[in-house]
Length: 379
Image 1 (cartoon, rainbow, N blue to C red):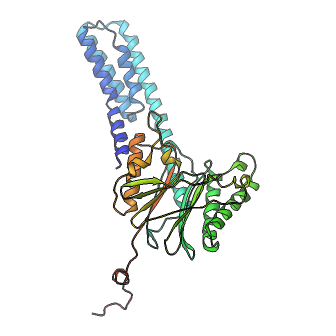
Image 2 (spheres, rainbow, N blue to C red):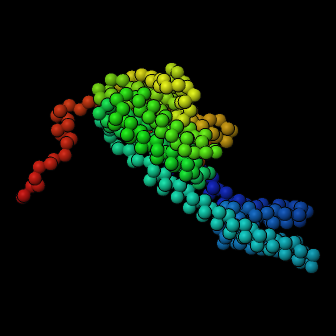
Image 3 (tube, rainbow, N blue to C red):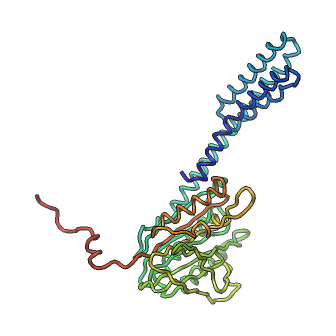
């Protein structure tokens, strides 16, 4: 379990002791002051504190324990009177109310959990499962659903080997729900088609822009204001250069030799769907991708994740250390750090994937690692 999530779980476990602590505190305070302080409000608060953190049985048990503690305190100090009936009747009523509250909370939690499971299942069905390898690239990908969200997000990624090289896409569609899913499907389909048939990266970007524009023309109202930030990248067959077209998206990070460097675009570009405002030119930047380096692409669920003080997460310091040439290790480091930063949950869905360029295998290496395809041994 990642550190941030582990801490959040431990924090919830500690909260389960709060009702018992309230009852114990009331009991000790009453004995210490010899009844000089009215501790009934503390006892009455115990069932309410139990409702959000304990089960129905635990909430009722807390109310019973609070009543028994109150009765014991009365018997230790004096003989019970009729005047004691009202506070204890009120405590019983508060326990019943807390039990009802607990049932309602449990039902809402089940509904939210079901909604999250459905959203995650749809997201997994929509997004392609990335291959573990693409040419000389080792590939890893993660998709994290926001803790607070139960809607289907618009984050997507893809990688494809083509006659023109290896092409990669990460994007974040504005909004959530079915419209976002339709746009994600459209962009993925258009990317796969363009990657195979468009000879250059600007052509791929232009086809994605055309697909977004077609979807906007077919929509109305809020759906007609769709756009998607995106990074479209390409490595030619000889892996000589990394080309990137950034359409208003967070800059990818190049992790190499203990340093993480953002690959910022020279010329800022508008997101997909807004390209009609900027003309047909598609700026493409060129970068080196050394052997052993890892390229990390992510959506704003990562770099816009906030801690309790509202400070955004910065992945650059986390990745400015030496990593093995393994994209999985890099992504685990990012996710572990972002959950640590936020206390165990994300405010928005996060998609991220990484590719590591490996050295070209020799002919002997390829022969040693190639699977045997001959006839089975007859012995």
